[in-house]
Image (cartoon, rainbow, N blue to C red; front, side, top):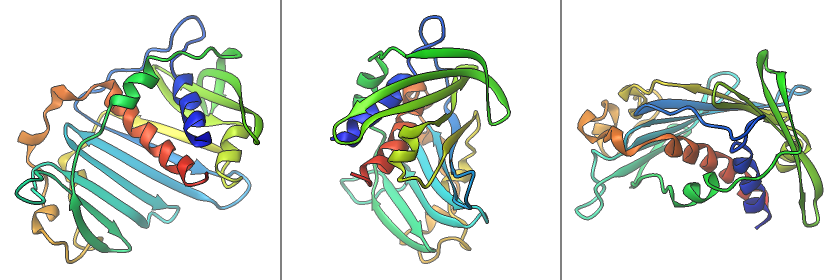
Length: 241
C-alpha cells in the first residue's frame, strides 16, 4: 500500500507545470523510453528500455557492460493457444520461455493522469544531466517512513529525470537518480530475439520481426507511454514493500 501511494505521488507530479499544467508531448505509434538507475558514488548502473509499437511492447534490461539481464517481448501476432491470441516471450540468462500475452491496461493510468497534485515549488532554467529544464519539487509523508522530497525534471513536454530522498529511500540507497530518455522510434526488430541472446524458444517466429498489421497505431497515445513508465516504477517499488 505504501508503494502504491508513493507511485501515485510520482506520476501525479508530471501533471503540473511552472505556470499551469504540464502537458506531455504526444507520441506516435512507435516510441521507446529508457530509464537509467544510477548511483554517482558507486558502480551501480542499470538501464531498462521500454519500446511500444501499437500492441507490440518490449522490455529490455542491460547492465553497464551492455549485457542483457532480461528481455521480455509481447507479440500479438504469435498466438499462445487457441483461446489466447498473443504471446509474451521472456529471456533471462539466455533461457527462453513463452507465456500468455496481453496488452497494457490503461485504467489506472487514466485515473492517475487526471489527478492533479500541487507542487511545493517550480524552478525554471534548472539543470539535470546537462540539460536545461524545469525542476518541480514537492514532499510527501508516508506512514513509518516519514517525509521525503521528490524532484522531477521536465523538458519539452517530457519528464527527463527524478531524484531526491524519496528516490534514494525507495531504492534502498542503491541509486541517486533516475535518468529518463524518450525516442520517437521503435523499429519492429525491437520485438524479436537474436539467437545469440535467447535460444531454444518454443516458437521460432520470435526470431523474426513482427507483423506490422498488428500495430494498430491509433489505439496508443500519450497515456500508453505513461503506462509503461508507471509499470516500470511500480515494479521497482512493489519489490521493496
